[in-house]
Length: 481
Image 1 (cartoon, rainbow, N blue to C red):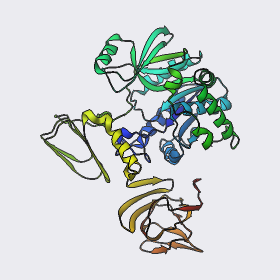
Image 2 (cartoon, rainbow, N blue to C red; image 1 turned 90 degrees about the vertical axis):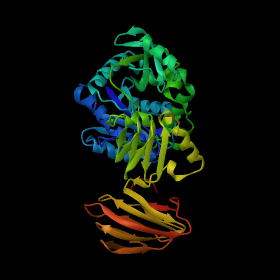
Image 3 (cartoon, rainbow, N blue to C red; image 1 turned 45 degrees about the vertical axis):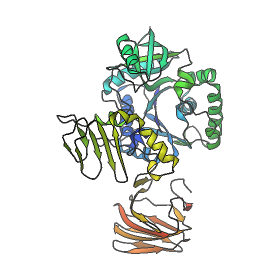
Image 4 (cartoon, helix red, strand yellow; image 1 turned 120 degrees about the vertical axis):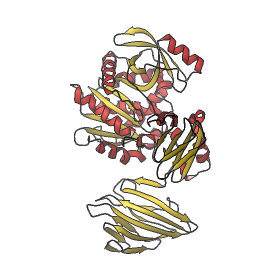
């Protein structure tokens, strides 16, 4: 019994300004129109489609804020009616050791300690799925022998951006792990490539739930004990059969913030590696993402509308306007409606430092795009200034915002498409295109789309404070009240 466990929580700071804390890397749309999470779900589902005995179940571990985004991707992949989906929701980020330990507790209770977990990060790109499935079969064989199995991608070049795994003696379809190696310098990476027994660390794992918990108790007792306390407190509020498990916030925050590699895999003597022949990328930088675009004769690539003049090896990502690159080389140019990144290719890994600086300044662009996705739809800030903000709001059919109130701002809503059902104080009314309503500060109000088409409206806010935290929720369909 093998169950895919999807880890979907990383912020992807090296892909800013497209990846942001509120809309991270797994939800970036690739040139083919699919997200990385979408592809991961389909890749996991294919294991059930082709292998007898693999249950039609997928467990996703993600942050509470990403639940509805993840659920929508699961549905877009066409899996919501064919597979059982369980979401394990983290109240804060706690790295992969905590996520995997809690997933093991869930599946050990649901299916027994022999249940096999296949741990897959949501931000990997793998195109050779047949080779991927072969490697999973080999990993499952080793994991059934009480091994902690990791996947080692066979390198085709010296790479300084990945960690490595040194392999030793043969163990059936895999090999024993001698050691894990941090990202090496170029000369050392060349030596690893020539040696033939070093693999890129793909960050994917396979093991029995009971073996993982036993090994963690032996080699990472602080993580194991804290995760066990968190699971017990979580179980008090819901059973393991629940499709939506919200982890206990206080006990989860007490789990050490450490990766599974550091906490367990580098310490245990039961670790094996399966050499994986499939192509693999963790899309860890703009250089990695840029290769998905077709180059011109000078090595320039673009997503969106771009013009290149006397330029070489330059990548342009533009969402809604033309970018012209003239006389430049080796640049990354990423243009979004509210932020522009211009970087030399050699500095692609350092984009995370820009995000850290923005976060220290509490600048909104590290966290949100101008268009912000919500469970009920989305809103786009069109313009703002002292004392006012103008938004375009889109509400899905049948969806509604929370029953809420603002202390510091009034709102004027104008419907431009569809029909709105509005609660405004003690009154309830329907507003059609070219009609409007005014909501004074302090009034309880709610917006609902009762129709079968998207509702689009313009919101004009006025007040002395217009922050998104000026909201008091009284009732909410999405658990935010």
